Image (cartoon, rainbow, N blue to C red; front, side):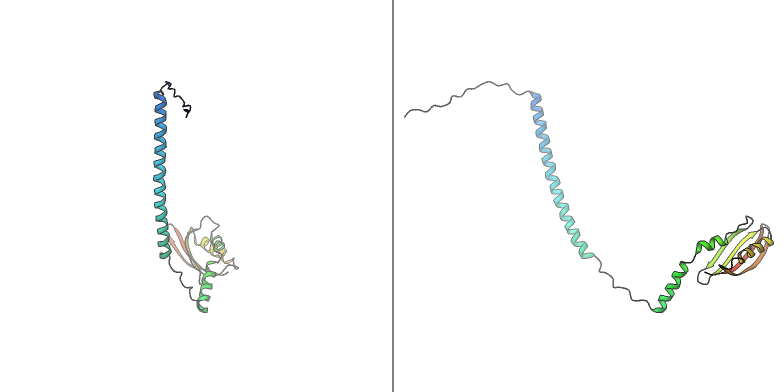
Length: 172
């Protein structure tokens, strides 16, 4: 048997890699290992948080309050009372305020008490003279479409002017 041809190995001398190239390779290897470690750590944290979320969803499903039963229907008297209260809230309060606002600068309103259920209005203020208070009451009485029974209830002279009080009935 003849011997087959065996390749001959030839050894050649090659240049060694430079230290800069080795440093770049080491830095790349360090970055790759750091990123791999961070990925595994984030994956573990994500799995832990997913388990926590599932556990909390199970607990919240158990802890959700049962829906309350529907409230009982109101009696007819209670429904009427509720309708009256809603109607009182829906009165035209802006119109009343503009109606009661004095046009004369000499009239200073101190207070206004309105009972929306009965429509009773009581206004107090100060003026320079009693004739100005009478004029203001007369002006309010001319608005018969919104106010009725306008009366000057009292006048009191003081050092800072004359205090007056007017009563009226508010109608819609």
